[in-house]
Image (cartoon, rainbow, N blue to C red; front, side):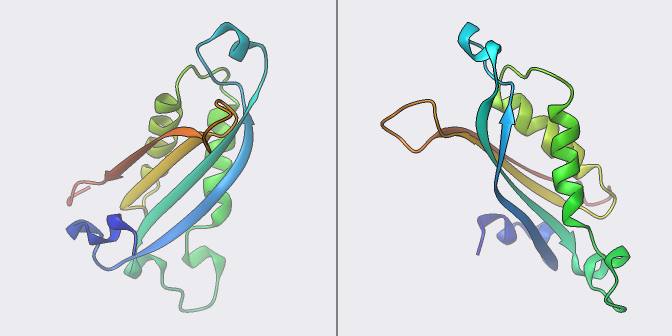
Length: 133
């Protein structure tokens, strides 16, 4: 069970996820990083109350569409160069959390090609909407 599901405000939620979404991003603070795109892996977990995500008619309109996650990431990347993975994570998480059905979000990014002696370097954020939000 993901650690986030133990958060009290996420009780009664369903987890929708996008795993290791591989994108090419113009990201980095070093001069050589500003000259091209880098491979970045993005993971997203959305936590949606069962009452807002349990289909009764087996219809896509009753749930949060997976395309929402991919399109949200694409919109952020289209804004241009990003210096920090922290900025990318924060921006994507904030946009995901703005969806009216989403109660919580976890976003992580990893740059797998930075160092030859490790799988990757990255960052992760986790946010839950206030109870009355």
